[in-house]
Image (cartoon, rainbow, N blue to C red; front, side, top):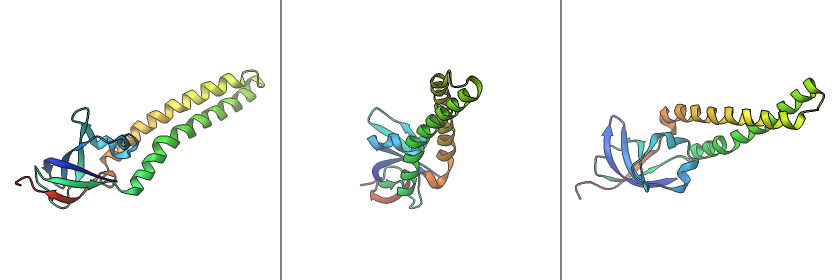
Length: 147
């Protein structure tokens, strides 16, 4: 996925780029590297291998593999935890209560595991936002800040 923005800061091999907020940002594993600048824009930490300077308008992208992994983790992982919790709760009810409270323990188990899944997602977000391979990469300088 390619986006466009303006470099506002550089440091080492990274740059901060201000870009327009996109609806697809919500499903991105790299969103931990983005900070809101306003309601319509965000600040993105990107790998700056082409040495873009402050003021340059650039294209940056997030790899398709990262987007697929992000989508799976954000949308499917909580569902897996919810269903696992419901299943475990139901089996626990069978063992402890001879199925008297199966529905109740299924709902409670699903809810508890769903919350655990959300906490896991938050931890994964912190982990992945620090990894260079999950950060956007500046691919092209569209115009320099001097022009």
